Image (cartoon, rainbow, N blue to C red):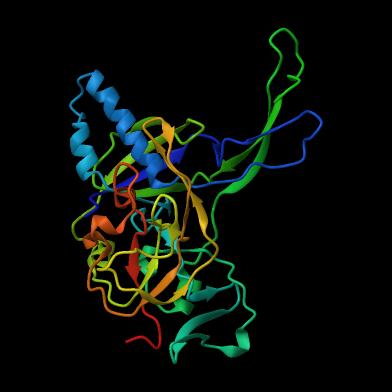
Length: 338
């Protein structure tokens, strides 16, 4: 089970993507954003730092074989760090069966094996919130709205970067400008990840743009309430709290294609999201992932927590994607499902 909470504090701006190149004549456009960085990015940082520890003969060094076997990470989540806030009560995606706007709420239930909104008079409600605290998991929708529902706390700020000619203060004729999505995070917010290993506190270069961040590791107490939630067996209903990649290298699917995994009877989800991680200095195969927040109703009870799921249920990129928190999920309560 996860033993540490890895918290990341950006020192200035971070970038959502490396940016697309623009010509001097064409300044219209904006690079695709991908933020926060997924757990695979943090995994790469662990191995990069470990190489430095090995070279310096540091006591923090772990054998690469040990990390490949026992390092498990999950995220991204985020926490409030202000006075009186509990970083262990981190924010995670709201399950799709709960519809929470600023003024109203609704909820999907199952009637005669079909999804149906609980309040038919509020069919047009659009969700304004995407996040809730782990401490409010499985609480009534009205309580989540009042106590912990939140929007993403970061903001995107387009930043135009010029590439100048070597001998002139003019932009290069080709690929002279590119646009990046700078991400600004409030001072009282940190990115949060779960880990089975600690990372020494300090400043690191993190993400595709290698921006400097401050990283702190907090041990998770055995009595921390959310650990009990992660250990709770999943029966027929669960919600993803991280994106899930299923299927093969050639074909992305919506659930594990394994005889031991019960076939979903119902799902609530959104369009797939791109998923790609860097492996040993090279980019892995691009895939599509089922987005976090998606809700599954299985035909038969699973009776296992995510931690107990078989590695064979997860695709491999030289390692099982379970090690980077693929499809981390928690049980949910849905009206109409026993």
